[in-house]
Image 1 (cartoon, rainbow, N blue to C red):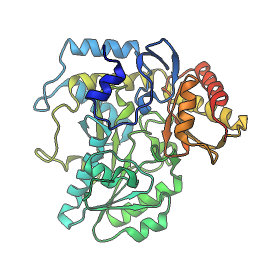
Image 2 (image 1 turned 120 degrees about the vertical axis):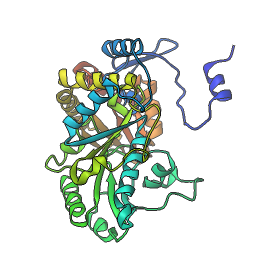
Image 3 (image 1 turned 180 degrees about the vertical axis):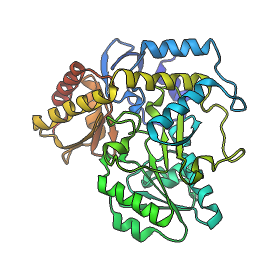
Length: 395
């Protein structure tokens, strides 16, 4: 009989650098391999499982909706989608929502929105930032400010400039007659948990207003509670409002769902009319019902406050330990990056932590990401700190 690794080797495309771990089941903040070894899951499916694994209310919601109506296509109206759109607009601001299946699709939507917005004046360029990550579609890798994702895929989509993250003078210098928008992650996730300064976001808003540009926030990883606020940028600059926001990951606890919001300002939310954009599966009754339930539980169980408290517990514990392998810790809510001292590779640290019973995620060559569920407990947080400090390799 073939092993699971054999089946992957023979039948699954080798597009991922998978770890040597075969996960059998999960519950709460923990997963188990086929030998019964338990791990604290501080990757949460890369910030996806906001409520952890096998949450009973999510299981119940899936079963109930599956027994009622799974899919109809977007040729018809269904209640779960309309209610989820209403909830997302309520937490973001006046506007409307489009539903897709992933973060890459959500960002594609923002890019198309920007091009449509600028089309009458011949503008199509979007300013993005070095260290960013916006997905693996052709538009996504073209927008991404990391060369490693682009190799072998030329020619890329035209119309993107990649600027130093946080450098407002570089942004001012880059704005030209073809510029239509600015796209950024308020917290760069794949780039190493780099948090935008509040003044930088405010100055971007001002520049967008002055030059009639769209300000777009990619909140695929930092949105919907991860930073301790519904909207990640509000943890940084709560006094501003973007023109568009993309979401995915934590929106539906692992059921494939992505979305983007467009503001009612300047009529943006009605700019993409019939035939301009679409998807077969996006926002179907099943995924929308789960998305509604996830957001309902986050609100009901005060998980925004928990994200702030547990994030502070992790950050303060890591900093107080003065561990010789830790150069610094960057954190906003439950989005944390441990930057390692020279001589320790992030991938080696992640493997050592995994051997010690803690799943984490590398972000570049020198940062370990911690992205636990939003409902992680104080006890699990204390245990994770212990596993980190005991298992981080030395330089």
